[in-house]
Length: 142
Image (cartoon, rainbow, N blue to C red; front, side):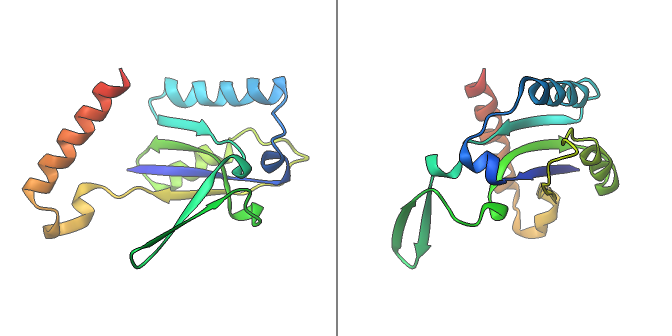
């Protein structure tokens, strides 16, 4: 099972406050542990929303809104993509994220859809297309 672990933004991340050396070290050690046991598939921090944009789709219209965005607690500061056996295991890993005692944040855990979740609608042709795209994407990253 794959899960996306979503680290929510706060006032500091949205203000562009960079982590301390100790925070970077702690997070690096945590990420290294995830990699060593074969759990982490990807993980990145995200720039503040003032460096981003949103595109709203309404019928045939596309409306672009530049950041920053006001609802800080609804924004994402970073993510991990992990592969574990269960939601319970994902929760156990998230409990170990090095968040300092004086920081208040929220981390969301969401399971990623797998091919079999789509049932008969996911035809062999669509599966082949997905496999081909994943393989090409991996080649592009090398």
